[in-house]
Image (cartoon, rainbow, N blue to C red; front, side, top):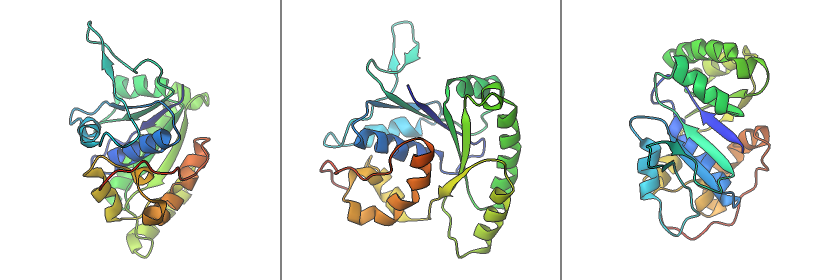
Length: 219
């Protein structure tokens, strides 16, 4: 089954925003998606607890009697949200599972430096070297009119890694997250600009960037 890992050792770069909205897209396409939280803060699990019953289902880990976490039976797509500080054997184990690794990055020098080191580590992982896991970067909370955005663009243009797109700094993500919702759960006209910015991400994943008809849910 397709497994997408959202990872960056820097905290607060938008990993959970990416992971929840990606899971929401898969759910909107009627896939049986699991959103797995590997972060001690359990941000994605807490978000799932807010998700209304009227929204398309997104499942999480099943815990067996011997305390082993696994995807629920019938799962077709997996999205994994990862913690800050991810490195070493934990990173290696997650990359072994992944078909795609999405690295969110904010337009600040501290984030750029931390992400640069992380991308070097990723490049050394065997599944990445052998082409079994693909790596792509997404700019998060980007205002393209700022110098910080220019700095981010210069950095990513020098990478030997696909740049999947830039997601703008908008309250849409914040307001929807507060209700357990994603871009794909509300009327397309409300979030058209943001959905368009996901096209590069979804194309890279081999998904068609289409807006499904939303299941009625309040936000």
